[in-house]
Amino acid sequence: MKGDNKLMRKNIYLTLDNETVGGASNPTGTYHSAGFVHDRKGEVLGSFNLLIMEHYDEIKDDDYAKKNFHLYEEGLKNGTFTVIDTEEHALALINAICDYYNVKYVMAYNTGFDYVKTFCKGLLEGREFIDIYLMALQTIAHKKSYAKFCRENGFKSRSGKTCATTAESMYAYLINDASYKEEHTALEDSKIEMEIFLACLKTHKKYTKNMHQWDCKKGKCFPKF
Image (cartoon, rainbow, N blue to C red; front, side, top):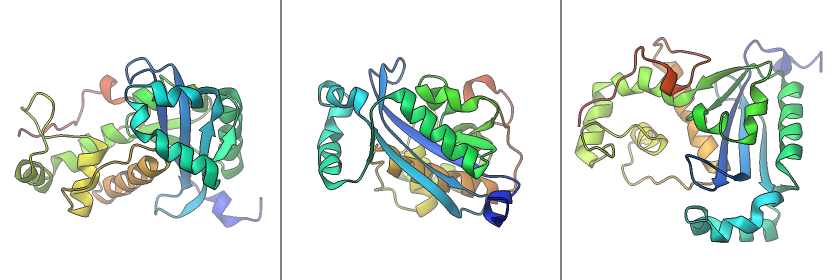
């Protein structure tokens, strides 16, 4: 490992996403965890795609998760996933991947969910984090072209007063495709979250590290709809 230049890079990132049962506000278990290890230019060094069997049987009965249950059934048959028994073992594996690649920052679009309300909170020990949602609010959301895209395509917040600031709306803007829909599987969602992060970097605007969106009051933009 000492001779591998890729592993000696200054900043290595993990962008991760989780799919859970029990609702977003109080999830009771994670059944799918996936992510990409990459550098700040977007070169992917490693990835994982874990189906956690501890909660697999709960997917089909969960109000939100059940719509994608067929994808997990198919993936399980096709060998798409790395199957792992428990969240505890999934955390150990992801930690080992982070250690191997010397990951400095763990990230997600809304770290207040993935790194606070799921087993992945254990990944914060000894590492820094970046909330990509907060980063997007401090960079992309300030662009006049983003607000224009949202207004033209009806992308609004639940209140209807501001433009949408979801990962789906951000990525749709980046690819200029208003018809884009998130798959809501951890692997595909972490892929678009990584692209949003890279786009935020390209704005060369300041952003806040080591703080969840809800804790930060500075620099955020929620453009009026």
